[in-house]
Image 1: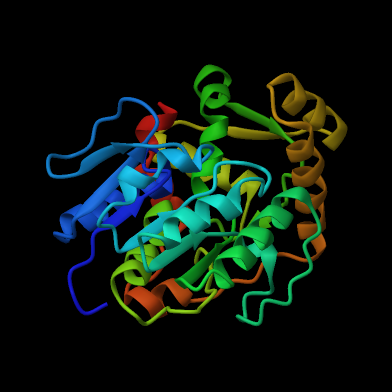
Image 2: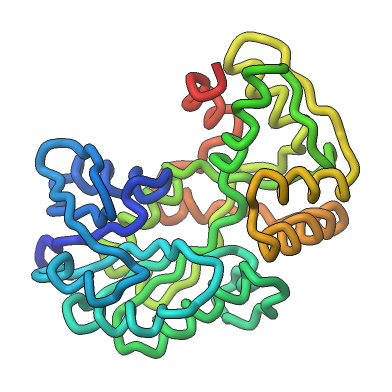
Length: 288
């Protein structure tokens, strides 16, 4: 892009989308935040109403937009073709927040979708890549912010009860995903790329809890439970059945075949990816 783009950010009230909005705004890039209801953003960020579940609602939000940061909020690809079609009538670029599970991260796109989550991401990538839009598909590993699901339990008991204490993942800081997204939205260096984005090292779930404890200044503990008990707890908490069926087997497989670790964040942004310990310090207030 040769001129200052106007960018629409979907998922703008989420961790990654919110960080993208903040970074674009700080850089002086005109940014719009797509919302379904009321939301607060810094002065100068325009909140626009729209719903990805209703493609007809997106036209006004997309007027004059050059690029879109797309966070798909559903566990299926139904309706995605219509959304991408509407985007293509207004914008020329889309940066999609995909998943490391779609491929092996080398950019050849030959990953074999093995569960519902991977399947919808793969379908969104396919639709975007054949749309005629300029595109980038970001493929992060697990989000460090997913451990915020432990916050209530840690605040009340100081213990996380979950399966697979030794499950080690290179969890990534949402700010690092956002930094790469901003690069993809505002420059041409990542056009047609599918970068695998990881944290800097593998950290077990037991270690994650300990690092959160260090950040908040009190000892916290991981207590391992059986996967069957974990699945029942997830269902009772209202998790969709397809999500439960996808997450636990995928996590168990990572015990023997952990996700790779790379330096893509540093190569793309010039700044090393932040560790899980740094993420925990950044989010200590959420666990107090």
